[in-house]
Amino acid sequence: MASNNLTRVERVFNKRYVPSGPKSYVYLLNKYKFSPTRPGPYFLGGKVQQKGKHGIARLFGGKAHLQKVLQKRSTADAQPEEVPAVDQQNDSLYLTPVTIGTPGQTVNLDFDTGSADLWVFSPRLPKTTDTSGHKVFNPDKSSTFKNTTGSSWRISYGDGSAASGSVGTDNVTIGGLTIENQSIELAEKLSPSFVSGVGDGLLGLAFGSINTVTPKPVATPVENMIAQRDIPKSSELFTAYLGSYKDKNDADHGISFYTFGYIDQTALGGQTPWYCPIDSSDGFWQFKSTTASVGSKKIARSGNTAIADTGTTLALVSDEMCAAIYDAIPGARYDSDQQGYLFPSNTTLDKLPVVSFDVGGKEFAVQKEDLAFASAGNGKTFFGIFLAPICSRSWRLPFPSKVVCSVQTRVPRPRPIPALQRLAALMSKC
View (cartoon, rainbow, N blue to C red):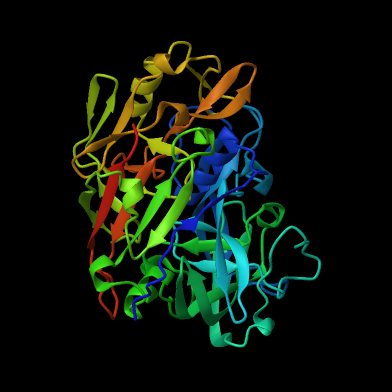
């Protein structure tokens, strides 16, 4: 039954997070597997892998196939090498508290609309794993936890590292509602980059078709909220209000939060949400984005789509879009050593262009102060928009700062999820 205790799910700013332009870009190169068009140390290359026969006694036979992996050259004439985990940004800028089990154990998770797994640190990790900086969910201390026999999960990364483990079910409480028998993926192996970060796991808000549990994918928390009628049938949605820690002096104090099952009217400020169709065939929140603007310059992108991803810190757009932005910023230049565009750190807001992206037929502007992502040293700043020629037809956009995004899922059971859903996006402050 629908809960009457629906509340905001506040996001917590990670004070240990250190933004890095190159590391965040490398993370996205691995995530989306695209080849950069501008020079730099990172590129997508081929690596031959043998499958079918393994071990000392089986040196020959099996099948060889070419796998696309992210590689790095330390100098122009150096031999390529695989990208180490230290080169990637796996830490999270914001985390969200979630309670699991009976009695409840609270962990801080990264809410990610670009993935569909709910996994957590667990006592099943090797004893050599240093979990002292994390909250670890212990299934043995929950009376409602049940192991899912025969199920496992595994997420692989381009540098060869991975996260994997076993699966169970338990009660999960998010924002005043409790999801019963939600699948929980318990980490038994983790790459060092996750261990050194602050987060205790991840909660995916994408569509269940990309869930990694085998032999059968599991329902996501939002799918279960709807199936169990934890949220009103008239409001089968979740919203993401992503403020910024830079805006602590604003009227909303830069707060960030999610809601499930209702739209926070205070955040709307009397405005009406904008809805557009969603194509979920690839498991993502993907929508048409056929125009963009840089100042007074309009950029047409016939047939282009975009993916809204709360797990992405940078906006990945076409070469043409990048060129238009940086041509409009005095002193901006491309740095091949850091593989990104830089501009002078002392650039004032009035010198930055207004950059807008189309969300299903209506453009929304990005706050100017959020265009500057991280310091690049020597008086230069990394811009938060990077090159990403992904099939030349799709952009990857973080949910912009100061945007309310309401995702109408209306997911019937059983699955699969219908291809078209709805995304509502409202710019509450330009």
